Length: 633
Image 1 (cartoon, rainbow, N blue to C red):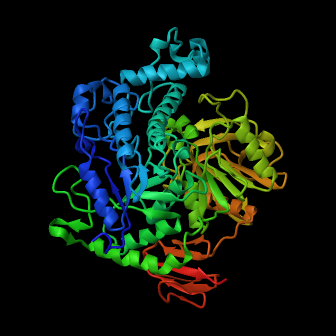
Image 2: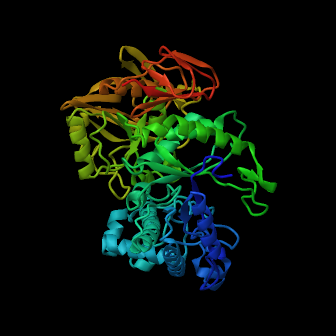
Image 3: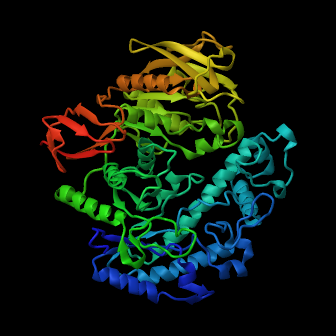
């Protein structure tokens, strides 16, 4: 039934530790060998998962110290998954052993397509761990980073709240759920991220030691770790995708773009997709399959195949129900895979989407804003969503990525600019790039402390202005809600591209002084009345723009982003609301995310590969409809 449905790839093993090792040192792999042989006979490739996401009961019973602990010392429990600590020596030791056994057992199968390490690393219902192993590991991390306790006190600014330490044993690991010094929270997150990466690298090195050359990945890596750094030593970045009723389809398009960009120029994979939506939706499964292909995800795996009679996830939708009955999802899968193969096989591997715009994504910067009143500043997806609204696809890039291929870079907030990254931004703008930057960018040091001078650090001359801190709205309203009480609302206005702009600023506003930059938008009220809200400064061949708020109402933010797009020379496609166009080499994908019929002219010559919806450049798409076009050469 798998082959009949058009499947070519099977993922197995991720929660099967207790079935591979029923007791300490008693291994049983014959059932998995049988599966490999059956799959090989049916021309099915295998993604083999290491089972370390769910340590077996015998391990926990023998080593209860491997369980995660909350800040009050309460331990996790047997019966769930992701309940063990990456700093626990026994857990890491037994994990290394089972991974090594698997690598030896299965390395020679010709249908072994890839390895998946663990499952959703860091995605735990127990959140952050505060066990003794974490505490000791954190102290060693700090010793290596700072050298002396005096240097730690200086770096964290521990004179405030009487926090000066005199011994390393006094230092506790922190978390965003606690009211702690942000410098302590930042280093705690950096340590946890390092622990997770070390866990990934440990498994990777064991598998590669046996020289199989098989690709290695891991899926849906937690944003509580640095995803860019985690995937750096792996062969592909992989995500999971489950439809959330709170999110629109365009929201989820932005989410899937993230994984495509965690390894620049490397195709991303999706290793868990629900076979059926968690909400009613006609045609949604095939719509999403095509959308994932358009966004560069050529490996798509569904979770899961056959219904389970027991277990916590037995409610999950499947392709095969009890009694070997094919579900509706199976029939949609079979139809869509046949459609995909018929349309795209002749092209071979398609190039990845090429974008002219990018949005900066830096986890270390995000962690400066991860707790308390500043958590709301991490407004990281609006730039990408707004570009999508304008018909422009964007990549998500890290400070280490190649920026020079883009015309526009949106930096919604980047707390700390290292000298190296500031130099990169300087060269990007000087060479003709446009940067649109906002919020508390460049006013922190690498330890989450304010720099003791105006920002943006290292870049004031590039932006032609300076930011002297600002005002935090501890009890601000949602900026997208109507609010006519000027005492509680900060407004700004001006003119961009010949159009009046009237907007609302919220959560945090900046005290900005122009040092030669143009000021197209100014604050209308508040103690900053008449002061610059948005600045624009030509530097070299490019342009540096800044807006002084953490959150803006969507209409005014859209106008600002559109202005930056035009200044960068990026062509806007005049498309109906909710319509998106993506190119992958010779193939163009068009999607209608809205619930309305979309009829429009597409400035493109080509032929539809699926139906006759494209006629002489005119295209009609039903709600959640799509069209796949081969461009004329």
